[in-house]
Image (tube, rainbow, N blue to C red; front, side, top):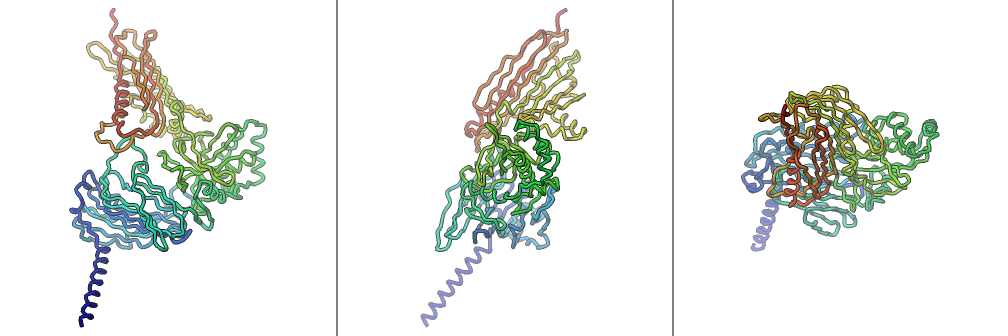
Length: 640
């Protein structure tokens, strides 16, 4: 009897333990009052959990399960309650569930199946793509509330793997966030971690588990001049060694390996029709200069083709054949770059298909961690003692122009059946420049007649040359919006493009401005920096969190000649101002030349990442420039 009693006690204990485990798993306390007060400070929302478990099944199969719960405190963070997941034939979404909880952590309702929208992700410029979106908007607005989502993604390739950031947005705190990768013990997974404690590795008989996590991370507020978040916040990239993509096997253990895989996708796709080869040979005949030959080919494909996104072929990573582009006269970045490569090959010029991450914000691609971190293709053409870069999706970009879309970043050249990791060119301050030359006539009623010529080069050229391709109404509207002179009227303008290898655009402006000068006690006060006074001085920071990040070198060079009325004389001129720091330099001075006031100004800012402790020093440098840019000269009536 005693033994039966003991067994009963043991079984009841086991049952109690199981129920406790189930209860712990199924019941989550989302009571807002239990959130630590420090996480609510400066927060619009709090991520209660963001748990991702990525399990590798084979060389081309994996499952990622995500549990994401966020408490929305204010209307400004309502977008975080919306679930938006892309999928296609390589990534399938399964088992989506959602539950809304009130401020006390009590369940309000479940998300219904008919609330899960499923629609195409094709954009206006995309001809074909099998990308789709699962989308849920709970449309719940009783604050604060919590929304919890749980879903699974099946990976049909390991060419892509999760990227995890311990950052959910500014003014968003994190209670708990984690990434766990479970792989077979004989599978070699690679990872890159930054700004986080090293991963915890647990080895079992059949699997290895890699884990990263963060807890109770206070909300971060936006700070001007901050680096890309992946440079400062907890970041983990996972990457495969061996993988398979749409039946094509590859490796990314080294950049050479990844280039070798990309090379497979190009094999046999650079064959052109004979009549096209003869046409392009005829166009370059009689031209001995190789750069001129490349320009002819580039302009030929620009005039013939147009860009249309096509996400098809080996997971969207294989281009159309050159024959297809030749016939259709359109393609995406992959197809147009491959087509241009084929045309250059037809005239004996070798070029390299190049994968790159494009965008105005420079990506953080670790040079020592081979991975698929690319979203664009350009063409690299090496010539003797030189290199030419071609943006093949643009119908009007000059030869060898690297805009801020592709400058100063790493790229993968597909070269001789392998890969080479290279850096694209970066602009110097004198190359990336806005230069203004102007003659200004001051009239007796304190109004101005202005004739100005502004030259844009480097990245600033890319910011302006698109004006050439706008209609007159939009072009004029944009030009007017960029002028900061008070009470002005644009009477005429002209744009002149110089699309050379070092292109620049010149904007000639004729303006009038009323009541520009002020008068006081018989004196006329004239502010000298008419066009681009610097006034973007950030606020003083007591506890700066991030380094100071300047993305590009940049300079401004101004010369303004003021013609003053004959009845006025120069009473005083501002003193020469000169600053030289590691952050940049500044020089302004004013001269009296035969009764004219000539104002010279040069401002340069140096790219770099500076310690957070230097933010206020950097700010002081900018403030001194702002003060100097406010320099004025005083004119007085001539004595009769």
